[in-house]
Length: 440
Image (tube, rainbow, N blue to C red; front, side, top):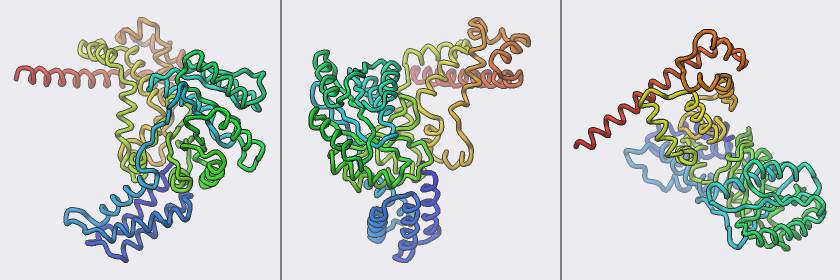
């Protein structure tokens, strides 16, 4: 979502390229361009001005070392200020109480219900919590059904009670049940509401007063830009929420909400959500987001996602099969599924330094693996376990069954063979190094 802003900032820093020192003139010119870039990204004007004023003041106060170019120094200052603008440090959820109660609020269509499922999945899988979801959107039957489906998908209980039309009573009943059955966390999904709808705003106030949540989150669609910031301020004035959740961060938004919301409402951004997958939820780290905005990638988050999907026993099993040249299509499919669980390919690519620029204009689709999966799924169990069985007639049958062509099947088989060979070489090399280390 920050592609345009990243490009503009890169152009701004080029003003200082080749300059031998920082002066008031070249810094003023650069920060003026940075301010324009922020305004184009839909950042609040007062926020953009205050930001560039701080960058300018810090830049003019620096004694640039011989080893550091003025442009590099300004990038460092801008990076630190961006991180500070977005909150400085990651802020954890407050999960006090038994059960801890998390109340979700926000506009219609902001992605609250999907986020409720993602948060429940996050707390269950990463924090080991027993979670209950509560469907308190009594105006939209589809929301109750959506939450039910998400609950089944992630293995979390959903308290629905469609007959109860009062959201306050429903929330209270759900919490009583959660206490009785030993739930750790209750996540209350409420109806979307407009900030100008007084009746609905009173309702969310009543829910909050009745259940006394340990955490109230405002869920906002990042694609609404500056309007999201204004709405957040209105909601905060009414219900004094504890943190913000930015959804749809993988869209083509300009990034203004992420950069402005913290300074305007003085509440931390706690989570960022991308895509529809239940695993596509990240704790918001301001420093890492500043890295991504300035084109430095986010390798730390990428490694963390990989570690979450890492299965030590499975890795050992695969390594043994590779070493004995027995890596098959079942193993390949298993590795593919692990990569897919890490999130959208576009999001993952954005975490690799320089990859955004390298792939500019290239559409990175999550469907890229589908033909490969279709080819493997069209094989018999014997063929998957023994790649050597695949002859001409079998390939023809697989191509027909997977909706691909014989050319695509052959291309995949060649890629599989090259991948297997490369993995075996790496495994043997690693084993050789380990043996040498042990002998020493």
